[in-house]
Length: 351
Ligand code: SF4
Image (cartoon, rainbow, N blue to C red; front, side, top):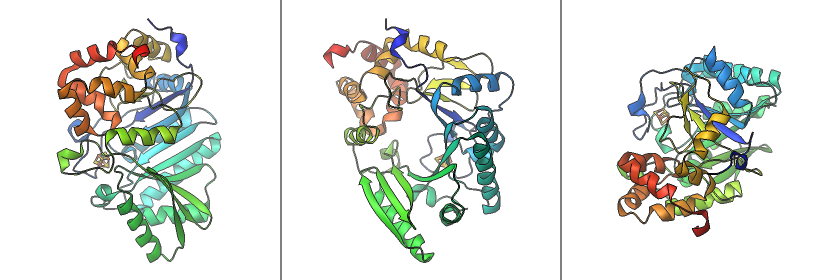
């Protein structure tokens, strides 16, 4: 059994999914079957748990199995209770009327400014979201960041496919219509820099999940996409931890119902923050007691994939899934026992 000292004490990433409500109704949404109108309420034991867990995190992500704009109280509470000088990011499609969206952004800005924290806003921008949203804030956001230059906020765009051409054409058309001169700089296969008036906005691309279910073909296969991630993070890509550091952290997701799971390895519920105390000590213990989880966290994902691909059924599912954060979840639905057996028996020495 691995010693718990191999894991970092504070190099973790946490994704807090504050709601499962969304009004966009994307065809490919992986959370459509999860809509129970669950909202995280940040008080009592939930607040205590979040304060303790986030105190050990390098990055605190706020998202949803829906859109966090539909549980704004939880968003504001999380920004407030995590203490000072924190690094946050929030993922949204912003599909609410502009005035309400503006108030939401300004409220968040005020909280992070008061706390000396920093919030990166990751705004959805791709063919699939744009075809469904009814409130489009792209130009408003650009203008707001150009004019107000909020010191504690960053605006970044996220595309859930690697279809750069579509996004770049859309951005060019909208900015030309608004008479804004701009430059698009290709940084790498999954990142572009948009420069307007010496101000930069990054556009990041990810591979779409389960593309064949929707008759879509993504630009990169899974191996090429993992190569892109390794270049982006400048380290081997492993599922357990994103933040580079001396020792691996343990990245977790908290679902709107309070369940705690590993980010990208959502096969087991580690605990529930509504009902019990969940600490990083407990999470570390869980990993060290599970050879499958330990290997997933420590062994580069490309090596894990090559082992899993030896099984024909799993190999087909890996190709179908196409996105590294959903592969283990999907394989565990096919055959969890087989999955854990393969994962648990991978020896670091043979990889
Ligand atoms: S915006 Fe996100 S959560 Fe909402 S339906 Fe689309 S993919 Fe699902």
